[in-house]
Length: 405
Image 1: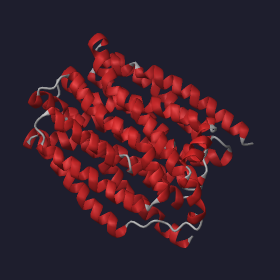
Image 2: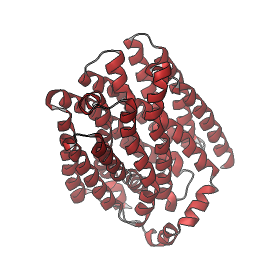
Image 3: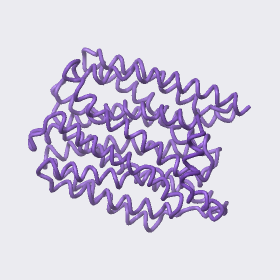
Image 4: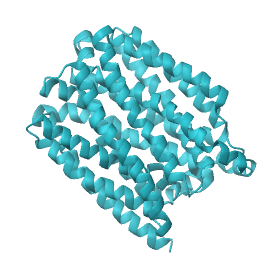
């Protein structure tokens, strides 16, 4: 127990940086879409498929990743995964045609899919119910900082040195971090590891138990919808600002991420603290916190779709980012409230997988709907989906609290 307590925040800090590169590497390509379109002669649907290829491979690999992290050392799964996707990111610097770009994006999805199930399961072992939401929320903030770096820094490098250099920079940084993790990351020694092993080997039993868990199923459905909305903005917002408001590539890459992600950092930290307090008073507090985030985010998304001035667009993005952070802060903590300890890795991997199937449809959805309604309305109409998801989450929180009284 002493070892766990002494190292639990060190583990959060180290994994925060891995989370940073996980999202910086995936966001970097979206910020240079205008340059890829020009240099490789790619249309909207081709660019959309580049984004979807990553997400669909990420989705397919998720359950396998979750299962493996329940069986093997999560530390080494993280180190190997980071090394793989960093090598792939660096190799993207040498791409000159569409086909190898799609292949490398697919391989990047393969590598990155192994990170979150292993990292979240490891952090859940380090942190009990008293600190779990805060720990996972702080770790989640790495998503937002990494997205800003991937969007802003990659575009800035691309304008000055070419988009190829952006991928070389992030790939090299990830490889350095992999060495640091191999030396300093520790995995807590769980006394029940041997006892857990037979259940982790029984895939049919795990699937059956999750199939009977209606609360976990509804959390997954809500996550699919929320991830769809997030993927719409991650993929196309840089291009929207570049085309609609005539910003240069560097400015569009930065502004497409910084407002949403900085606000999300505040939201995720607020949501983590709020959820820990609410969950001590009543069961379902984490889910109630998520419902608040979805309800708050819906009107800001609708405002974005009808905004006639850049200042209103920015205001809407800040509001959406704050609300998104509140929801995101408890994605995994809420799931862990509904599944047993031995199912954490598999459940997180499956949830992540299904969520990115929905996310993989988002780039193509925006590419198609933009031709009829314009990109602003294609993005802004996702507010109606956020409202529906908020209603479902509030219902789930209420049922969860009554069931566990």
